[in-house]
View 1 (spheres, rainbow, N blue to C red):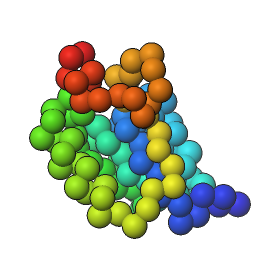
View 2 (cartoon, rainbow, N blue to C red):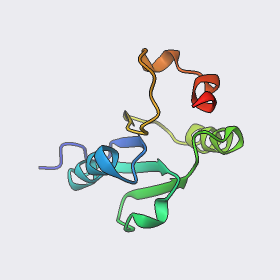
View 3 (cartoon, one colour):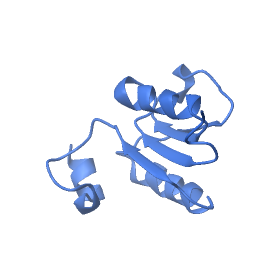
View 4 (cartoon, one colour):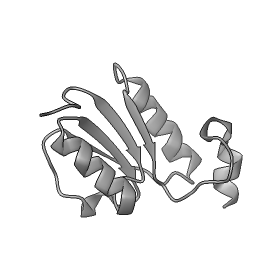
Length: 101
């Protein structure tokens, strides 16, 4: 059963570790997955996988990613597995916090 068929997921930090495992599970279950990472070359190309090479500590690269994301019709799932995370709710994070690290 493909419970995520035609659903769109954005996985920040999807090139390794938990993010990559999550991206693979979503792909196996029918999702269209956008992964974001600094080293997307290490991830094998797959059907329904879109790679975004982005260093999330670089403001210009993040701005470019935002433009790409805004062009999507929708995003059904967001996974933050980047390894850059402060102890506060996700929506309260700002670029100031990310760049400081």
